[in-house]
View (cartoon, one colour):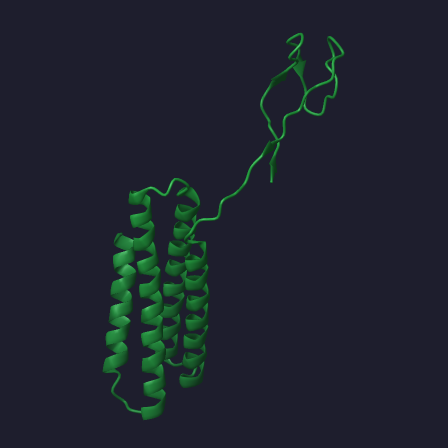
Length: 170
């Protein structure tokens, strides 16, 4: 990757200012020396883990939405409750994922403190995936049982809301 230097440049022979794109000094006529900087981007050791978490979550949340659409009429209150919870979880997961990606990009020196914080973010992202998996399991159980008792699903909603609130507080 090349990075174009955008600093003020001066002729090394006479000191005259050199404008961008100028190949010869306007004062002394000498050729302008351009030093292109080559930058090698070193990928973070966390990139693969972050990508895997992102794929896992996308798969789980799409499966959860699919089950909600199969189980509930869009006009039903439970449908809206489930979809709102999933969407709220999606937004927060996306925010936390972006933060984890930025932290991983910035950790070039493998600072132990930063690595510990990245590990915490990855744990939080995994918690979202686990809760989405729990939701999927409860929806499947609910679909198979046709029972009127929604205690397990309501407890799961409470757990998801607690997770979302704890991440917001963090």
